[in-house]
Image (cartoon, rainbow, N blue to C red; front, top):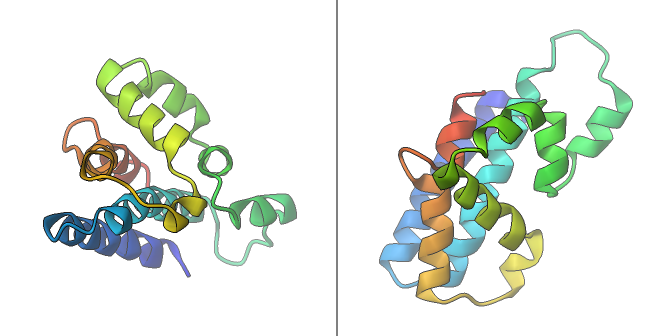
Length: 137
């Protein structure tokens, strides 16, 4: 997988989550919404790799995770995120994603409102987490 692969996958998952929401498949939409952020963060990490450079072992190990906090750090976005979180709209979207989405979300069921809230936090055209990440990959 490379940066372009992760970018494409994030966009595909965004469309899939929307289709799931439109078809009352709320749990799948919820899970895919968080997965969009994971893919976008991995695209941001890939941006920092250079062709022919031997990868930093710890960064490579830490990048093979679903932990969004670790991925933000590996993408070198932690300072940018701290600044961006001062915006109350983005800050609340980020908080919703980071506090509620986990890989284990795929094993749970979610209500329509929970799924729509998660999707909105990610896809909001002005303050969505995915829109912010796209600016960094």
